[in-house]
Length: 311
Length: 258
Image 1: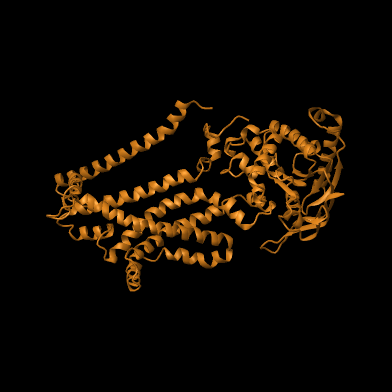
Image 2: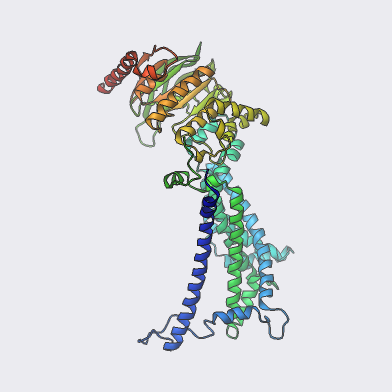
């Protein structure tokens, strides 16, 4: 058995490494942003030594200073208002996340159901798969107002169309990955199940679904971000008084006077997406056993201590 | 009484093109209860196909398969077959014990009884200390022993093995062969064993069925009358060598034939 210090170092170092690389990426982006801005202003908006214009203007309206964006988070959101921008944006993010979470759950369940249906019926797959794919080519921006109007007629709460659009974007990655995962067991695994005279329910619950889980979680992470995008887009025509969609719409209209507020909303929206993906990753750690997450053959080749026990 | 009775079994695979592929042709064979029969032949002789026809995983095109007097289909539904493939095919999300319990779970055996049976099986294959390990923590030979334990967990009358030791190194392979003979003796299971190794077939079997390719036919049946129990001494026995030569000659004649 491995000694504790070795084990803790081997599990700790990738985490330290990823935290360090995240910090480096953030710092590098900040340096790039401010460096480009400083360069542009020093050279008068052209590439130094030429008269070719820079692709993005570097004035404070097009590219506010990072510290101005940061400071705006802690300033009142509206002139004379009480609440600071950060609080308003966090409230908006929480509201949007609620719609996105509902959409994510409905979407994932739908994707799951579609995959199970398709794996059990080739006929259903052949007939319906084109529509599943086509669904993602429909511009969401166009159907969002339609859904908002319909649900208004039906007197549904205003978050309903938002969650539906969110689910519409979220179901697809899950459906595709789940289908692939359900089909992932080797033919001999299915032959084994047949030799036990296993019914289709046992085949699904004891072989296909467990085999599909490692495929589904990466898709759930994509669906998590897609559900937030869907919710923000869904909020745009919904006429809500809160939500990130509403905030982005509002700050976009006042972009010329206070551009840093729009940038701040974008940052909060991204943080919301990252947090959601992080939650899904935590769920994956709990649900998918460690052995299924790593490639056993790779582990044996690389001599991973978890993978090899002397014969 | 015959445990497995094949008469006039043929299997033709329909291909999308005009030519059908005849994998098996006119196979008739009686396997006695408790017998160890090996199927050997060049690749493409349909030995794995024949195993799947016996197991009711593939329907024969013509002919009948009877297992203990019932059809292969009824036999499968009655859980008569334990199967072991070249790849161990363990479910990596289950522990070793849970893998062995899988068929018992499907058959609805109560949990406590399942636990006990899995423990007995682990003792049988010498892996009692590895019950809570995951498959990826085991060597190839150990994984294959788990696969054998899983196949025998529900005490099937017939054990069907498709090149189970084909992926193992020579030393592990010989050890596994001796293990299998011991298990065979302890459980009195009827075994049909597909292999492409002549010494393996001779060492293990009471009869070696030599098959020819395209279409797969039975070319010869070699009775192996080496004394039981077989072990290290058997491999050095001149009788063992002469039987290996006999099977080799048989295989050579079919390769010369068109």
